[in-house]
Length: 119
Image (cartoon, rainbow, N blue to C red):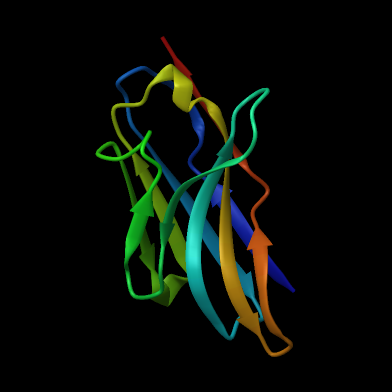
């Protein structure tokens, strides 16, 4: 069994900051890419940021310069530091990880954490 547990969501005023965390646990052999996605009300899920096992990062244009993704491989944890938040960042944020178990590779998802930015 593998679990991804997110934390750090909440309500913040525009211009504020939040830090999301996502810890993977269970029978994990290794983890490749880790990422954050979000789904706003009435919209499709979109990729926010991704980080490779070696630390290479990519961001959606809408969050470049405001969000920073990082990871702690020793803790199997990925973070998303969100600064200068805007109301349009309001969404449920999900972490995703490409995890290798003894049975092979597979994508795993967290349960989601709500981020609400008030104007």
